[in-house]
Length: 107
Image (cartoon, rainbow, N blue to C red):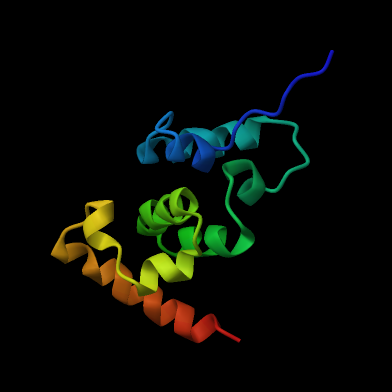
């Protein structure tokens, strides 16, 4: 019997069907699954997004915002979507770290 692929964590977040705080549950699901997908694919992230998230889990709202707006994560970070994401001024340290990391990893 054909079974449709379940939506990824990021897709569900974009549609409001999952909360950012639930990501650990999805990671655990991947560990328990027999899928051949990478964890990045399973979560609905690109390898680059997953790499950012591993380095700094606070990037997750930016990843979901990028997906929702159909723009790159770099654009969300560099164009400072903090207000739209609902992050406080204190969260600007996240942006600073991410911008620095992006600068080091750009070709």
